[in-house]
Length: 260
Image (cartoon, rainbow, N blue to C red; front, side):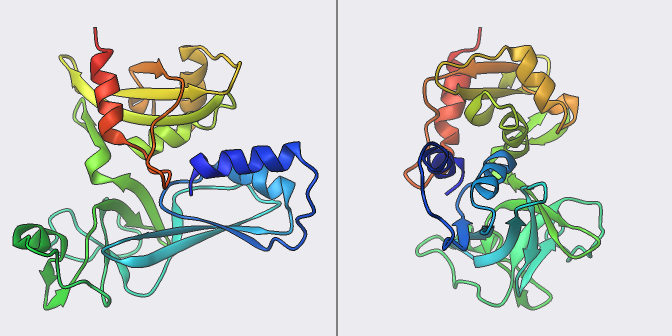
């Protein structure tokens, strides 16, 4: 569900008088649920768990993350399920736990035959390595030393700026840490100096204001400074799909239309 659903749910819970002792678990998938929203959900209903699910149409369920009351909620680190792995940048090898390189989050075992009528896309998404077929839907990540998977985001939403790869999702999560930000999506746009520059499109809470400096200061506590947005645009509402997924095409159009 992500914050697009999680935020109105917690706002309703906090504003109402509900008996929620029987609520054991809240499950989120399809879009990231930010740590701030998780913390509020767990504070309101301390007896429940929050489960983040990771997967795709091409893989099914791949991994999960459980959050409990009494601990600082996090987003982006998952316990892998059966068959989940990480392939190298060039698809040539499996990356072991603790490898510093960022690879492709992949899945073995339950792998689709391919895309109907699209042999090229099927060959790219379902490569064969040493006789084993893999499904690679496009997420980037790495295996930590303890075997968990750190997810960085979709490769298609990556911004190449000043020779560095910046994942839109990690900048979004950093900005969402600011209490004034109700929603946020990040995109790239052409830049003479950087090649591409990071632009944040933010939706502030109703009747709330925050300066660009305040937003960058908070985001700078969670990501490297070179990843901070070069421009911050404010909109009445961030556009998302009915399932809560960010509309990155819309975000790119908004970012470019505002370019001076």
